[in-house]
Picture (cartoon, rainbow, N blue to C red):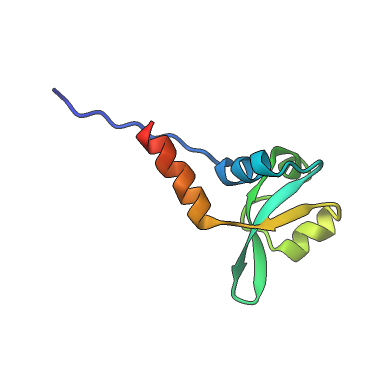
Length: 88
């Protein structure tokens, strides 16, 4: 029998997981430290609607959307969520 592979992309898994535990009203993003600055790691649909995108500098994002709520990204938690989906 031929082996089959399935590829699924979850662009907001990290933010969805974080928001499920602690909801936020309004635009939301997870941030990662890169060098001397923070960058957006994952953005909510509302943040994306405000023009924010993954990889954007946090300072630029706040200039565009001053009411942006942020939390540091938890890469271990994101990996655990992916592992749980993989077992499913």
